[in-house]
Length: 284
Image (cartoon, rainbow, N blue to C red; front, side, top):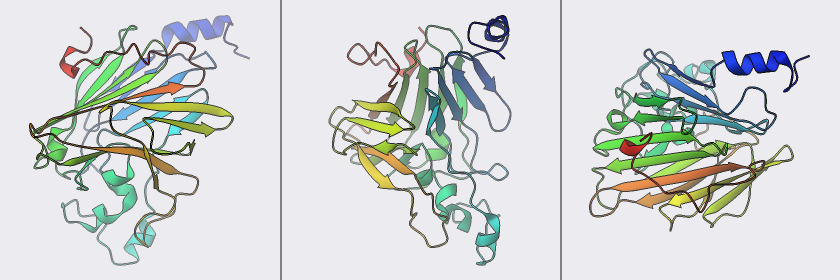
C-alpha cells in the first residue's frame, strides 16, 4: 500500500511530472499540486477547435478537482442516437449546423466564455501560447481569438496553479463592441451559496470551495440552471448548475476578468495580496 510518506510515494513524486502539455490537433494542459498529498488541486485545460472529430465548442474550458472532489465538470457528449432519430444533422461542422443547437456541444454548456450569447466559431482554433511548469508559478495561456472572430479582436485566457493550491483564471479581451456582454461560467455539482455576492461558496461531499471575482470588482455571481437545458432534445444534467457572472465592455472595447478559486483546505489564501498582472507578464 502506497502512503504519502512511503518510499514508493516519494519516488512517484519525483518521477511523475506535476505539469504536462499535450500538443497535437487538440492540445491540452494539466497542472497538479501533488500526486501524494491528500489535499491537492488538479486543473485540466483544453484548446483546439470545435471542428475537430466529435468536437465541442469548449475551447478554453477546464475541469478542476480539489481536496478529493471534482468541482468544475464537463457534462460529456450528448447521446447521438436521440439526436439523429429526430432528423437533426449532427455531423455537419458548419456554423449553422444542428450540432451547435445542442447544449452539451455549445460553449454555453461549457466552462468557458460566451460573448453576447453567441456561439464560438466552429472553424476557429485555440492555441496554447504559453505553458510553464516552474514551481513558483505553473501556468497555461490559451489564445482563443479565432474562436471568437467577429465578436472580439483578441481573447486570451490564463490559468495559474498558485503555490497556495489556489487557481487563478484570468481573461483579457480587446476589440469588443462597446457594451458587449461577456459571461464567465463554470458548471459544478457543488451546491452554491446565495447569489449576488463577489464570492460564491460551493459545498459538496463535506468539502467547500470558494470562487472570488477579482475583476471586474462590481460583478456578482449568479446561478444558472443546467439540470434542465433549454431545448427538449437536450439530455438533463441532474445535480449540476452553472455559477456565472457577466460584465460589459467599456468604450475602449477592452475587458479583463479574473477569478480566484480557493479550496477549503488552503491555510493561507492569497486573496487580498493578489496583484493582477497582464498575461504577457506571467512568468516574469
